[in-house]
Image 1 (cartoon, one colour):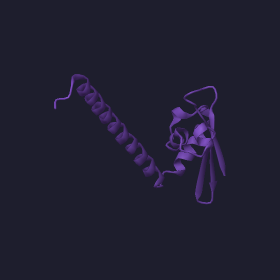
Image 2 (tube, helix red, strand yellow):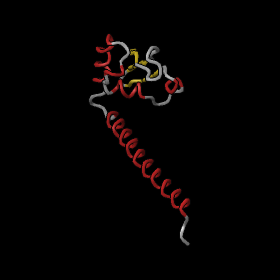
Image 3 (tube, one colour):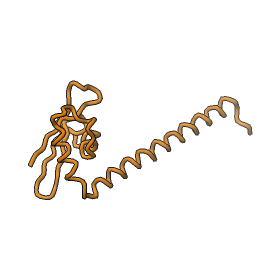
Image 4 (cartoon, one colour):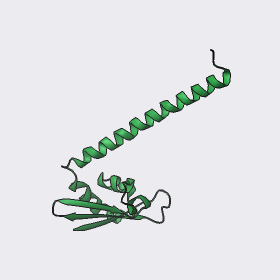
Length: 116
């Protein structure tokens, strides 16, 4: 079974990406035509459609397909993997903010002079 959904592109809303969900037995393969997806990398289009994000739909006619796809993942551990992914992103952003503050503080101290 193959389900194709058109996902909005944030960089070019007029040119959506095709996200294909291919179910074979008890496995689902997911492909996206975006630049990351072409290289078989993770992309936001795949994740957001799995989560049932209606805002990612390019065409509201795909709503039924989106609902079907998102229900396929309801009882899987994969949703926990997505949650862990988002948690790690938050942790990284917090670390980046802290690093930026340290860099600014170091620069300030260097510019004001460092007491020896």
